[in-house]
Length: 486
Image (cartoon, rainbow, N blue to C red; front, side):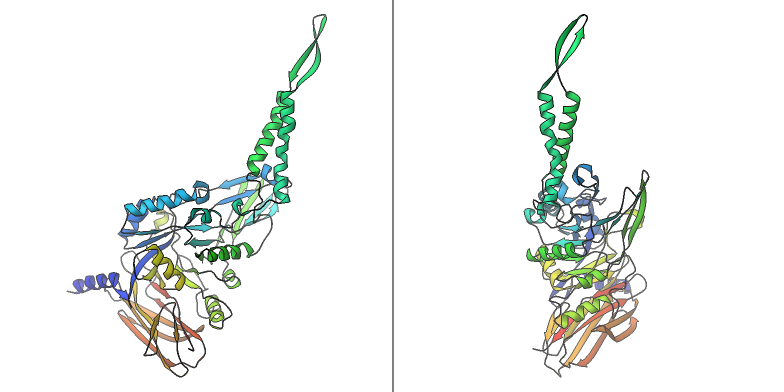
């Protein structure tokens, strides 16, 4: 009987709404074999369906390229390391392949997106035999830009589609002029005298070696300098967060969404290239989320230790600035999968973003992402927590994640929270409610769990958000609800 009840509960929770919305569990930040992933789109869709996911938000690499060139002719002397990417493979081809895979796999929504490296930079020098490349993993995820021409023109390091004709670009193309003297040497026969027996004869020869070498060097220079525009963000100086903010603003103007990816993950290592030590280093960068604005969301739950979302830390500082009207937008939390393949026991489903949508469509998912109608979830493959209720009400109106309630001063407020498990089995959970960066409620108990926090609205703009933790790794992180005066 208990198993039957659990099964019925799982069906209700999987299909049932929070308010009038359907829960759509999704894996966000997923790579296929179109860039650096191991699985095809069809294999990803099948794996997602087996794990109960309703959507996969793809983040193929936009342009994954690292290069170094010696001045003054950096293009001619550059050494390049590049991984498969959307830009190199063709933006139109990428979008078409996602559409075709969607048609073959209608039960799992496939949402095309890209992972962008806005900028990285070098320190050190090959002359000193010690070089370091910084911030190659300080990335943003972009969704909602589906026009091929606009997607191809995203501002990012090495995307010269966004560059201009500058003096550095002209200098890079200058070695191409070597084609002219090389062609003259090949076209002109050089006259010299040669002795044949007792006779002296005039011999005319083309200078194949010198002319061919000059033409070859010039041709290579032109090919490497193409399309003769400057890199909008050259990697030879630290440009700070300017390129990242430029990308955020550009995508915002196009109506898309940007997500700071894995802000507290660490990426570092080194290898030797001949006698030169080449290191790479991307330290955690939660400060970037406080120093940039107008982005949509950030990775709040992923397979790493984080502090940014803890009470009173960076997320609360950002949200406090928003309710004080010092920021134009809040920042939402998502669950970030970072899935490339099944190596090291990885799977596509343990880290989820659960969207609250009115319909299963790409547009509905993007709207929910922009408006904060979602929560971040960490679970085990067979079962997980389900947020059945998180709402703010004054008795007359009710709002859920991402929304603002207009409340007169003195009005009574309630914050409701409910948590269950997908299979109906009880789990012990600890629930923390945060208001304006401070903990205002803490409870513990078994699922199904219900809690209500009551207070009178003092007229000061406020937000509430909650975190639920069960046995490791079970976790839920809600997005906030807000209250303001009418």
